[in-house]
Every structure is written in structure tokens, then in C-alpha cells.
Image (cartoon, rainbow, N blue to C red; front, side, top):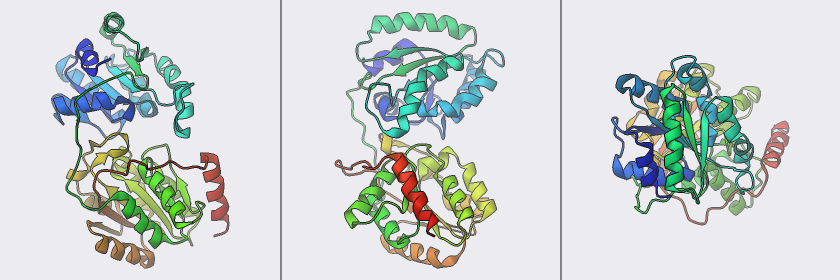
Length: 373
């Protein structure tokens, strides 16, 4: 189905969401049509943030907003759906568009398997009526279902369209880029070299894939790294938990700007605890690149100032490999919680692989290594 048809049938003029590769057609359509426009389209920090934005839009306009997200974001909307939107509370109608990663019977990555199994059930448990859109869904079928949904929305309840892989099409191309020169995979190579045999906790998406391939290319063991393949936004908290319990061992966290934004409260927790053995490296390309390249707000905010305000004793931003290497070496002997923001270009090589070990193998190898430290 053409994404233009979906948008026309839903009939809303306000969308907010967190980008998803399964919804790339919708994301690209919204960027081409509206860009980032507070009246029509906002890419938010996390899906709960989106639900609250949608509520505010409805309160101000009495119109029905749309929230789009990957199904992994269902966890982030449970609280605002149950305690804000629900018809037993404020009865705020919202249309959710949910990309169905890990649909049973469709091969996907391990972090999506269980989420895929419970995607529709979670919507049912939250009293959200849902309709699955696949490649064969017709416009007439969608029109009919949207007619039913409009009656449900009038009662203050929420509804959801669950989008199967390849169900939406959009012919226009969108190019996402910035002016930064440093390539993320090269940045990760420099971090891995500086870290040596120190443990690394890496964030969701291509960063962990590139770290895995860096180890393979170097002939190194993967035991040094915990690859946070799911649970976006939580790698720095995982790293904090490790660092607090291994106080004599330096721990590195490779993070991304979209992940930092998603759960920025973790920076306050890091700053309060001030683990002297933790180096927090945030690779900032101002984009949700792993799922298509749609922008984050991170290119317009001062992460260094935020880190310092949260209590980080040291924070710096770099945009060259010379400065990156200098800061990584200094962080090794500083014995203070440090943040190094690295300005990064958008893009990755087309043949980037995925980890060849399972998530459970990664966990066990990492834990076994930590026991030796």
C-alpha cells in the first residue's frame, strides 16, 4: 500500500514518533512533506514522550493525533496510555502506527523475537483496538476499518495500525546527511584501540555491529564487549551498574545521540554517582541512522553542558581524530567520570554484518571475562 493512501485515510494533520526501519516509507513521507514542523511533525525522544505530545495536541485542538513507533516502543507508552490517555482517565483519542518487528514466522534479530510475539497482545491489554496492515491489505479494507476506528476514537479510546514488513511503499527518496567528517566505524576502531582489554558496553544499532566487526577484523575476542542489541537508551545505565560493582576496573560505554536522548535521566544518575572508572563516549551524528537516518535534536543541543550540569566532572566534544585520540588517552588516567562527545557523519558501509554470536553467548562470555578482573 502506498503510504500516501494510509495518511489520507487516517486523515490527521499531526504526527509524532520515534523512527523505525519498518516504517521508513512513512518517516520519509513525513520528512518530505513536513520536515520537522511543530504544527505537523515532531520526532520525539521516546515513545512515551510522543504519547504526551499527542495528548497536548488533542487538548489544544480537539483533533486526533497520530503516534508512530517500532513495536519495541510499546513499553515506553504503557504508562501514559494507562494513566493519561485511557478513557477511564482523560479519554484522549490517539491513532498509533506500530512497526511489527519480530512478527512470528518472520526472521528477525534476537531483540525483536519476544517483542514481536507480544506486540498485538500488549495492545489488547492496553485496551487499544488494532488492525494489521500487510502487503495485501487494500485501500477499501483500510477505509472500512478506519470507519470503525473513528467511532471508537469518539469514545476517547485509542486505536492502532500494526504494520507488517514491506506493507508500506513510498517512491520518493530522502537523503539524510550532515557536515561532520568522522565516520562512526573508524571512531569505534579508535575507541577499541584505546580501551585495550577494558570492558566495553555498546549501544543499540550499528555501533554494536561495528564494534563486533572491529574485534573480528583485529583477531580479538568478543568477550570484552557487552552488545546492547535492544533496550535502546539503557547502555549507559548498564555500564554504570558494571562500573559500580567493578570499581578497580575501567569501563567504557559507547553510546549514541538518539539513545542518550531516549532516556536522558540516566545522565543525571551517572553524574550523581560519579563512577571514577567510567568513560562515556557519545557518538553524535544527529540522526536515528540505524533505522533510516531521520534526525534527532542532538545536533542542536549542548551535550557537554548537559553532562556538566548533571554532575560529570569532565566533559568535552571533539570533531577530529587527533582530538579524539588525545581525549581517549587522557580519560584512561583521569580517574574521573568522563564524557567524550564525538561529532560523526551519517552513514555506514553497505556490507556491515551482524554479530555471529547469540545474545546469551555474548552475555556469558562478557560475565566470564568480568569474573577475571
